[in-house]
Structure formats: C-alpha cells, structure tokens
Image 1 (spheres, one colour):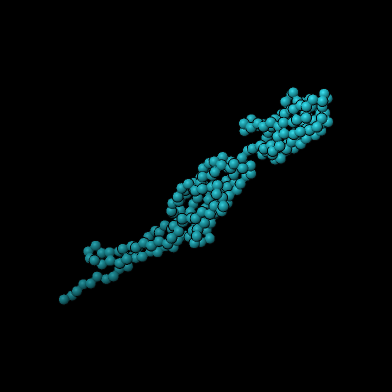
Image 2 (cartoon, rainbow, N blue to C red):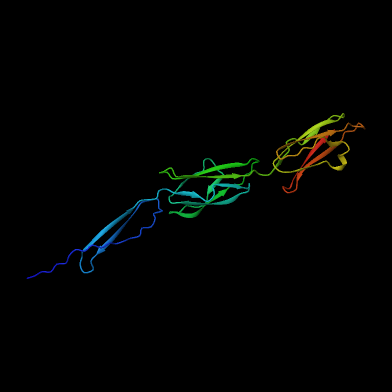
Length: 231
C-alpha cells in the first residue's frame, strides 16, 4: 500500500509591535493553531519598557498673593511621588492616573498674608529611578502699608521729625491744608520699600499748644492711617 504524507511547509508571519510607553515591561502570547485538529503552538513576545518618563509643560509659575487653584500639566508613565520640600502653603487637590498621558496636577495655594514674596520648589520624582522634575512656584507678597509710629511730640522751638513708612505698594502722604503753615515735608522721597519722610515743624508763635495731622493712604487698598503731631 502506498501512503501519501504531507510535508512540512515554512510560513513567515509579520506582526507590528507598537512602542511601549508604559513604565513596566509587557508580554503577549500569539497562538497558532490548526482548525482541523488540536495542534497548536504559542509564541511569546516580551517587550521592554521605555523607562521612567516625566516632563512638564512649564516648570516655573509666578502667581499673585490671593488664595487660588493652580493646574500644572504633567506627562509621566509612573505613579510619581511629590515632595513639597517644606512648602506647607501648597496642597494637592486630586489623585494621579497611570500611563503616559497629558494631565493636570491640581494644586491649592493658600493666600500669602505676609509682606514678603515666597517660593516653593516642588519635586515630582520616581522612587525607583532618578527620574524627577522640579516645579518652581513664586507667590507675590501681600500689598500693604505699615506705619509703626503714629504720634510725635515736639517742643515749642520746632524742628524736624522723621516719619517712616514701610510699604511694598504706592501710597500718598497728605498734609491737610489747615496744617501746611507749620508742618512741611522737607525732602520728599519715592520708592516701594522703606520710606523716610522728613517733616519740618515751625516754632510756636503764640505760646499755645497745637496739634496737627498727616495722612498716609492708598485708595486701591482702602487704606488710610493718621499720624498725630503734637507741639
């Protein structure tokens, strides 16, 4: 009896493998089987990870002194950790997601009630690798004016007094008309830090005590304070 056998044939199968953007390696099984029998083979494809990736749309933010929410666009393929590095005035609002995607890191920023600007350097990093980015947030100071000494006493001979104003915003000094004949500014100064106003006080002519006022104000801040001068 003559038996006919079927010979082995060679086939080339092509597969397209997409880029692995994930932090982890991945594996897939391809099963090749005969429809008419139980014969089958499996091909295992292991693909390496691209590694830890983290990038920022912008790494520097300059914001106002008011309380506010800040959204930062971050791209990463791992669950990064956040180190606020002592910046207790900034907190995270939402949780993160997984995979290389463009998403928002949502932060809540407290009001800056001080007269000094402040800066936070927030570190976003992978605990297993050296992958990291730094977000720098600088918050401006609260606009304000402070006059520590608000009453001056000077003898009947008159003289010069120094009125110090600490401010990080513009302001106006006003001598009301009724006091301009004996209270005058000797050397007006301009600036936005510490200001010294030198006021000359005329001598008394009639021997009676008198009292005058100088006003420091800023309409935008709804600020006004009165300095009393007694002679």
